[in-house]
Image (cartoon, rainbow, N blue to C red; front, side, top):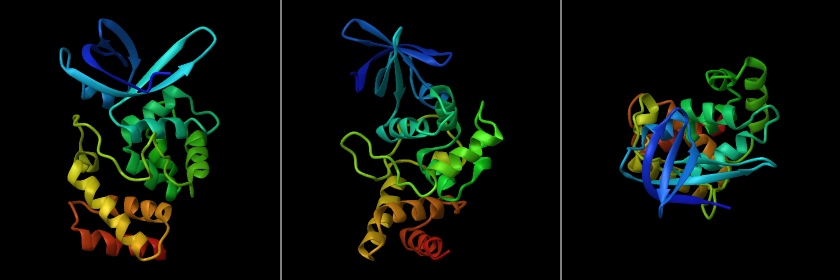
Length: 212
């Protein structure tokens, strides 16, 4: 199985990209968020989820391991296939998916193309209460996506923000709170701020989330 591809991007568009690795061009299916961060002629590094079917082998590419892990987790919900999972990841960051699931916010999932109200409700219900998926060799922590054109809360999710949220989770764990509960509380608290919070404020709001 292919777990990661690093090479030169030859083409990016229409839901797919071609990555040249040692003279072999790999066709990779990608969401618009991932495609937006690829530049033709530039070096690309994609985390790969491989789907093997009787008549085809399909590669799905992501900028980071957290997105790939959520791509797999979303498809554990009946009715969610690769297309719907990519559509959700196009509009929601991993942290926002975790927050929406913990709050059973079906409207967040319903914003994705091809996800109707019934499926959105099923996703929110089935993912609620579950810890975030662990990636390959990565624990249940927030990881920063590669830079790509984003807006709103998504644009704040750079490396410093990931460190901030991980520090907040660590603080909650030191207080005796379980890591999965801490992750959900911090994700929800972080998304409640209109501007970047400092660590103390983030921890304070996360504790309120846990108390609700």
